Length: 98
Image 1: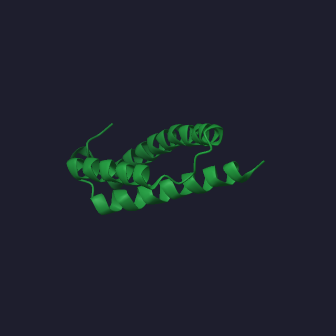
Image 2: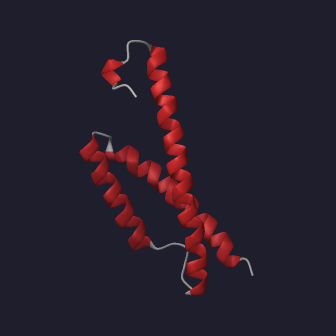
Protein backbone atom coordinates (compact mmCIF):
# COMPACT_ATOMS: atom_id res chain seq x y z
CA UNK A 1 0.00 0.00 0.00
CA UNK A 2 1.28 3.40 -1.01
CA UNK A 3 0.03 6.78 0.08
CA UNK A 4 -1.30 8.91 -2.80
CA UNK A 5 1.66 11.27 -2.67
CA UNK A 6 4.01 8.27 -2.70
CA UNK A 7 2.82 7.18 -6.13
CA UNK A 8 5.26 8.25 -8.81
CA UNK A 9 3.27 7.14 -11.85
CA UNK A 10 -0.26 6.72 -13.10
CA UNK A 11 0.29 2.95 -13.09
CA UNK A 12 1.04 3.08 -9.37
CA UNK A 13 -2.07 5.18 -8.74
CA UNK A 14 -4.17 2.77 -10.81
CA UNK A 15 -2.80 -0.21 -8.88
CA UNK A 16 -3.80 1.43 -5.59
CA UNK A 17 -7.27 2.27 -6.93
CA UNK A 18 -7.66 -1.36 -8.06
CA UNK A 19 -6.62 -2.57 -4.59
CA UNK A 20 -9.16 -0.26 -2.95
CA UNK A 21 -11.90 -1.32 -5.38
CA UNK A 22 -11.39 -4.96 -4.37
CA UNK A 23 -11.75 -3.98 -0.72
CA UNK A 24 -14.87 -1.93 -1.42
CA UNK A 25 -16.52 -4.83 -3.23
CA UNK A 26 -15.65 -7.14 -0.35
CA UNK A 27 -17.19 -4.74 2.17
CA UNK A 28 -20.29 -4.21 0.04
CA UNK A 29 -20.73 -7.98 -0.23
CA UNK A 30 -20.46 -8.25 3.54
CA UNK A 31 -23.04 -5.45 3.95
CA UNK A 32 -25.34 -7.16 1.45
CA UNK A 33 -25.31 -10.37 3.50
CA UNK A 34 -26.84 -8.37 6.36
CA UNK A 35 -29.41 -6.80 4.04
CA UNK A 36 -30.30 -10.30 2.94
CA UNK A 37 -30.72 -11.44 6.53
CA UNK A 38 -32.81 -8.38 7.39
CA UNK A 39 -35.70 -9.26 5.07
CA UNK A 40 -36.22 -12.58 6.84
CA UNK A 41 -36.30 -10.83 10.20
CA UNK A 42 -38.69 -8.22 8.83
CA UNK A 43 -40.96 -10.96 7.47
CA UNK A 44 -41.07 -12.64 10.88
CA UNK A 45 -42.11 -9.34 12.48
CA UNK A 46 -44.39 -8.22 9.61
CA UNK A 47 -42.21 -5.14 9.18
CA UNK A 48 -41.90 -2.98 6.08
CA UNK A 49 -38.85 -3.01 3.82
CA UNK A 50 -38.57 0.78 3.87
CA UNK A 51 -37.85 2.33 7.26
CA UNK A 52 -37.46 6.08 6.58
CA UNK A 53 -36.13 7.05 10.02
CA UNK A 54 -33.42 4.38 9.73
CA UNK A 55 -32.51 5.44 6.19
CA UNK A 56 -32.10 9.03 7.42
CA UNK A 57 -29.96 7.94 10.37
CA UNK A 58 -27.67 5.90 8.11
CA UNK A 59 -27.29 8.76 5.65
CA UNK A 60 -26.59 11.26 8.43
CA UNK A 61 -23.84 9.01 9.84
CA UNK A 62 -22.35 8.46 6.39
CA UNK A 63 -22.33 12.20 5.64
CA UNK A 64 -20.64 12.91 8.96
CA UNK A 65 -17.99 10.23 8.42
CA UNK A 66 -17.37 11.41 4.86
CA UNK A 67 -16.82 14.97 6.05
CA UNK A 68 -14.37 13.75 8.72
CA UNK A 69 -12.42 11.84 6.06
CA UNK A 70 -12.33 14.62 3.47
CA UNK A 71 -14.85 12.97 1.13
CA UNK A 72 -17.60 15.22 -0.21
CA UNK A 73 -20.66 14.41 1.96
CA UNK A 74 -22.92 14.91 -1.08
CA UNK A 75 -21.08 12.17 -2.94
CA UNK A 76 -21.29 9.78 0.01
CA UNK A 77 -24.99 10.53 0.41
CA UNK A 78 -25.69 9.88 -3.26
CA UNK A 79 -23.86 6.54 -3.11
CA UNK A 80 -25.65 5.46 0.06
CA UNK A 81 -29.04 6.48 -1.26
CA UNK A 82 -28.37 4.12 -4.17
CA UNK A 83 -27.17 1.33 -1.86
CA UNK A 84 -30.15 1.79 0.46
CA UNK A 85 -32.55 1.93 -2.49
CA UNK A 86 -31.27 -1.40 -3.83
CA UNK A 87 -31.63 -2.92 -0.38
CA UNK A 88 -35.19 -1.70 0.02
CA UNK A 89 -36.16 -2.98 -3.42
CA UNK A 90 -34.55 -6.36 -2.72
CA UNK A 91 -36.24 -6.72 0.67
CA UNK A 92 -39.57 -5.51 -0.66
CA UNK A 93 -39.51 -8.16 -3.42
CA UNK A 94 -38.67 -10.90 -0.90
CA UNK A 95 -41.36 -9.74 1.52
CA UNK A 96 -43.98 -9.93 -1.27
CA UNK A 97 -43.02 -13.53 -2.17
CA UNK A 98 -45.27 -16.10 -0.47
